[in-house]
Length: 194
Image (cartoon, rainbow, N blue to C red):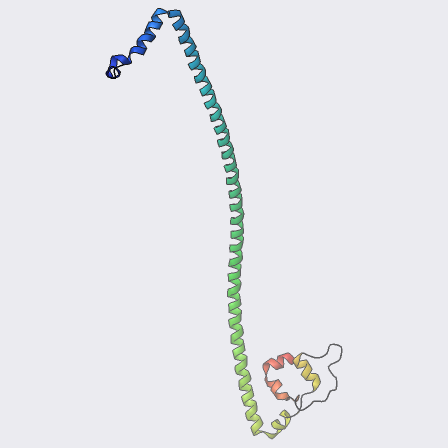
């Protein structure tokens, strides 16, 4: 066979010539083969379409299941967000209340500091006047050197025994000796003893 014959376009038509000769020579047999081939093509096409339909149905079912799952997750997330929102609102109201309380406490502490400074100034002033009076007046000096009774001491210190009366009758030692006028002039001790 000559290789140049393969390049010739007419040589490529030889199979079609043979087929055409078969169809024209035996038309009934060619028609039956054509019908069988058509049935096979239709069967393959139907089978392919049926398979694609089944794949599409499975994909659709999977997609619907995924959508339902995502919808449930979305609802769960919304529910959790609502819970968190309620918690945040509750905490925000508590924070507001705590800020109000802090402002009230700061005002109270400021007032207490001012009261404490005033009391300390009054106490210092009273002690200074008492020292001057003690230095200049012998009767006052003698009065201030008298010991305070134990009953009054434990009452002012708030450490009296609960089961005994305030009058225990113990004698004062030198180290426990306190003077009465210092208590009478100190407003803090005066209110503790009353």
